[in-house]
Length: 395
Image 1: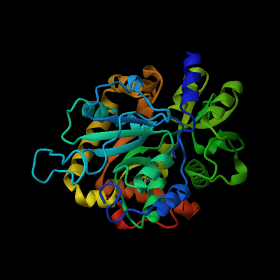
Image 2: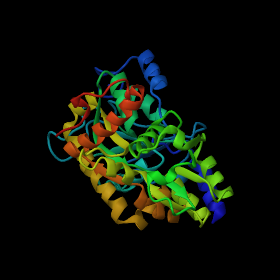
Image 3: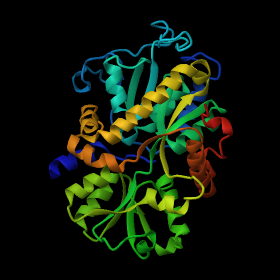
Image 4: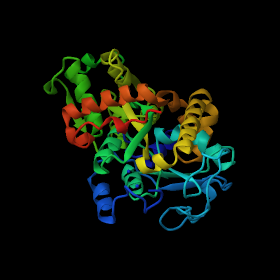
C-alpha cells in the first residue's frame, strides 16, 4: 500500500488550489503576441502531468490510445469549421461553426467531477458532442483558451479573474466546480481550531499564491499574527507529505487527494482541520465561500452558442452529482482516466474534494466574496481589480 501511495504522490505533484470568435479567428480573440503575453502573465498554481485528449465517441481507453512523442493523442482534434454543425435536437441548439464543444480541465478534483460526463460523451449519450482535454498545468489551459483552442475550461478561481482582466472581459464564469480542498493534517488531534496552531510550525505549498492568502486570512481572522505561526513553504505537496511521514509531530496543510494519501501512508496522521469549514464559520452571513475551481467559457463562444452552453451546465451538474452519490463507480472512472492512480484512494478522497456545481446568484456571492478576500491581500492575484458583473453567468 505504501508503495502505491508513494507512486500516487509522485504522479500527482503540486495539485493546485490553487485561459476569442469561434475557433481562432473570431472577434475578441487576441493576436499571437497577445496570446503569448497572456499565457506568460497569468500566474497559476500548476499541477504536473501529461495532457490527455478524450473525444466523444472514441471507444479507445485512454491508456490504450496511441500517443505522439509530445504525449498528446495522435488523433487530431477537430478544427473549427470542420465537421459541420452540431444538432442537439432543436433548431437553436446548434454550435455555430465546429463539431464539438472543447472542454479543458486539470488532473485533480476539477476533473474528478467531470468523469461521468466524459464517460457518457464517449458513448454518445449526451446531446452535445464534447472533446475533453486534461492538462497537468493550468497555464496549458490558459494558452488554449487565449488562442481559441478551448471553449470551456475548469481552472483555479483566481486564474479565471486574471484571464478576465487580460482578455478585456472575454471570460465568463459558468459555475463553481470545486470548493476548498485544503486540510490541516497532523497526528495531534488536540488541534480543533485555528487557534490551536499558535506557536506551531506548519508545512505547506503555495508561497505567494492562494493557499498562502487563505491561510493568512484564516489566521488573522482567528486572532493570530504572522509571528504566532511559522509557515514553512515547500515547492511540492510530496515534500510536505514526506515530512509528515518522517516527523510524527509535524503539521502540514495539504490539498486533496494528497491529504487522504498521506493519512493512508501513515495511520497516525489525520485531518484535524478542514479549511473550508473554517472559512464558512467566518463567512456564514455573507455567502462567501472558499473556492478552488471554477468553470469558465470564452465570452464570444457563449454569445454564439447559448443553448449548447446551457446544456453543458446541465450535463456538468449531473456529472458532479454522480461523483458525490456514486463514489465507487466514480472512483473507477477516475482511475481509468488516470486522474488518481488507484480507485480505492480516489473513492476515499472523493467525499473530501468538495466537488460541486454552483450557479447563478449563489455562485456569484460565493466567488465574489472569495475574490474580494484575495484582492485585499494582493490585487495582482485576481488581475489587479475585482471583475465586473459580466464575469458571472446569470441565465
